[in-house]
Picture (tube, rainbow over the protein chains, first blue to last red):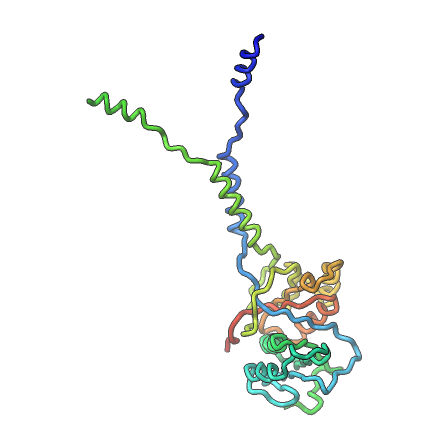
Length: 150
Length: 143
């Protein structure tokens, strides 16, 4: 058999072809699945690194504190008109400029009847001001603020 | 004359759609959806989220803890009975993760939930070593 005839036989062989139409059908089915199941909304919120509560550890009076009693807000035992004013008072303390982490702690205390809406606003306001939230729990829950509250 | 026209018609080639590029486009779309999708398991409950002007866009979480209107606890879409259970589960899920950004636990709470329900969960996540990503909506609270 001559070299020429061998070559001509080789060239006659056709390369196997895969059906690309079915390939794109599968791809579009996958797209439909992802469109139906996807949730493209990014969550909104604020990162608040709250330290784990230590039982028996007493809160310190010299630390700034935010208290929620279900009717209003107290900042360092003084009434605050609203969360906007609280934000201003927290911003005035310049927490990001404080080097010692202990100086950046703000205590958050709430009464049992406080809804999460108010708690959330206080928590995010403290975190946004560059401070670290620590949760204060009374040994006898349901009691007053020590000073009788407002 | 009519014969000529028919001959001309025969010469016209059929329109060929290149299907190979269709598959490429489809796979590009799939890659887009895989990257942008949020695969976190949400519980089957309706929530009214708390609002605040201090929120920002957060990354998709590894762990999602939800407290619904009926004071029900959920971790990654599955119901839990107590804050202690949440603490142990979060502890297990965070095992081996060192970086703070990896230890973020998203907390979604219905805005009407009371302190006796949400504060034990916040403490539980903190005890488990989680960094709380408190989920809410942007804006002033509804009256």
